Image (tube, rainbow, N blue to C red; front, side, top):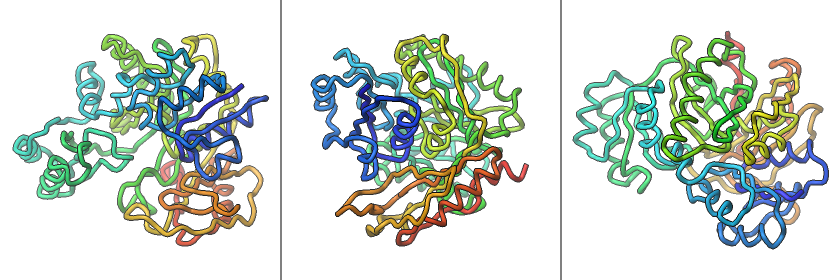
Length: 417
């Protein structure tokens, strides 16, 4: 079977690795991939959707899996389907749950799905007026895609107004910030919930917890994610039932009513406030770094993906390992502030029950180089969360590149309960 994976990060590497380990006779292709994905398959030197369609036809690609939100927002699913090519992911219209925070918040409001109080606006005077009514801190979000960086938590009203002005003027995030969402700050703990969907039915994956702040103890600036673990016991049965009944089912039914039937991965970023789930955001693909800890736990990933594309999820079940996984992101020296110089990655040893998912890497003269940003994820597996943590950090200690930084407390929410 031939599978094309769209994207270049550790998420796409993790999907590929899981497919390789669970499926026989598999040929993998990546667009664009990274310096390590070429050890799992073939990197294609294009991100042009029409070129990818032609390549898929000429090379008889059986399935395309979309990892990156950018491809989804550009309508890659629509174009592949128009050409009768199998593809895993939502249409451009359905992907608006992620590509437009304003669409998402209005959708939540329309279908009575719990979320923070909010205002969507492109007008600074409206923004100022709403900011004066909210309790501090205040959350400001750019409407469009900003690679995980379009969210500001303002500690003062002056800061909230200043950040709103920067977004609306285009200074902060260009066109992605020309419209914004201003919302109340919810106090609780975050969880990442993933459902594989086929328009009608869904299968819930183990609940994960991401760590977005750069530094230990959830300090420092927001990042794309510094680590994750799964499954999380913070999601008890009562909470899971609320998430299914009050969020996932209304979302799938609502999207059908909007003529935007949802296929693929529905990723719900939740804030849990007094055991009540509030939607912070929707994403329409696997999260990163959550994907890196979910994929190693799933025994039948290809079966789930194919069932989603063929609208037959009701006929399959999720087959899981009885294990825990923790992933620790190793980032470059200057992340997330600015680019870092390239440096060679030296790996001394990969301990048993651990592996690396590669992201910001290139292959130069047969040397694996750290390119900047989030470089790789050290993943540990174990029969307990503590075992998984020990393996992940043992692997971290065996990897070296210039300026390597990583959090030392991934999973701390679970360990302090």
